[in-house]
Every structure is written in structure tokens, then in C-alpha cells.
Image (cartoon, rainbow, N blue to C red; front, side):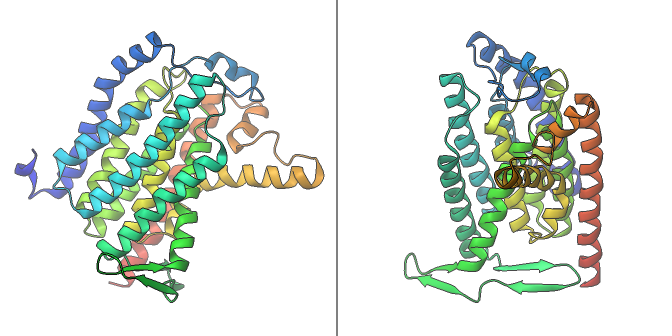
Length: 347
């Protein structure tokens, strides 16, 4: 639809942000009304902060509209490539997994949906298929680069299965990137605990990933990342405190998976850990809390994930969100600076 702008790739990226933002803002009110009339609302965890009890019943599954917006705008803003289909496929499938989880929570009127094992199996299945397609169809090298240090070849242990002309399975790369993709998917999900926290942080990260993809001459992945940033901006209009709707696991799991997949396509697997450092910190806070409590029956944090710790310390929800946005921006800028400096250094 926007072929006329093909000679202006930078404009297409900005157009992706703008159109996905507008489309999300136009579709979301009707979706909110439908959810309210259907009594489909958020189930708040019983052991959470008392101030969050007012969120009980707030419409959830806003991620459905976010995914629709991303799909539509990605296709109309660019000329989809194999990378586009892979990125969309992994993102949408993870969103469907999250939708099943959200629907389970609503149906059983509890804050827990699918079992952790069921979600992990689904996430690992999606990420495994994505990685194998990325390696075998679009030529992603099974390597991980640590800027200014080394490039680690994780394809040294590779099995070629004689199907469909031969499918290469780089076991070490598959293992490491599976952990990265599933870890980021769940990390964004854990971050989605305060009004606007996940959507604002993901927006920042996706703008940086769009810049990295563009710098890597990957226009379509750059447009895809831009649409994700745009839909987060549009969603934030309704998700800012006090939220009218939550994205649910439909949105958070999908956004985290999209981030990880973009890291693979742009070969920034290591740098993405810095860019998404806020998400990593949120996930680590939960892991550390659980491990330490099982060993000592004591807690390091007043409550995990990390954003709840600062709520317990007396910070208002808005203060936590804005300060975490700032931290996310600093880490994303640091990660991009490392990537840019290294790409300039190697020519």
C-alpha cells in the first residue's frame, strides 16, 4: 500500500510507528467495551500489594488488538520477506499461547492460568521452530558475538537431518538461543505488573531494535520492530495509570518473544541482554528471591518482581513506572551505543 514511499526507507519506519499507534488507538475502545460487556477482567494475585486490589476486573487481553495492529501494519508498510514471516509467526504463536493462558485465568477466575510447565513447553516449541527456520532458511549463522571481545562459534556441534533437503541442527546455538528467547518472553511477562510499565519499556526497546535492524540493512525487520513500538505507544494511552485495560499474557509473552527473535535476526543476541536489561533484572529478582527463600526461609526483596519491592518501600506506582522507564532508556541507549561502536569498528 505504501509502495510510493519505497525510496524512503527511513520514512517507512516512522510510518510503521505512526500507523500502528493510530490503529491501536482506534480499535482499543471497542475491544474494551466488548471485554466489559463480557465480564472478561484481570484476576489479581492474592499475595500482591493491597493497592492492586482495585485492579480486579479491569479488562485484560489487550494484546489481541496489539497483535492485530502489528500484523496489519507490517504487511501494508513494507514488502514482507522471509524474515518478516518468521518474526510474525513466532510473535503471533506466542500471543496465541498467552491468549490461552489469559482465557484460562478468566474462565477459572484465578490469577494463575496454564501451568508453568505447559507455558514453557509451548514457548520452547515456538522458539525451537523459529531458530531452526532462521538457521536453515534465512542463513542466520549459529554464532554469538560479544562486542570487542570475541565471536563464539556455537555451530561446532551440528547434526544434519536428511529431511527436506537437509535440516541443520546446531545444538549449542539452539540451546543458548532457546534460553534467550524463552527467558525474554517470560521476563517481559514478569515486568507487566504495573500500569504502563511493560508497554512503555518495550516501546523504548523496540525503537532501539528498529534502529539496529535499519543499521544492519534489514528494512522489513526494522519496520516490524517499529510497528511493535507504535502499538505499545497506542496501547499506553489506555494502559497508563489508572489502566483501562491490561495487555495480559497475550501481549507480554508475545512482545518478549518478538524482542528475542529480533535479536537473533539482527545478530545482537548478547547486546540484547543489555538493551533489555530492565527485563533481565526483573526476572533475576524473582529467581534470586525464590532461590534464597528456599535456602534460608528469608527474603532479599520485600516482594518480587523488583517493581513490587519498590512499591513496598513506599514509592507510588507512577514513580516506579517512570523511573523504570528511565532505567530502560539508559540501558537501551547503552546497548545501542555498544552495538553502533562495534559495527563502526569492524566496518
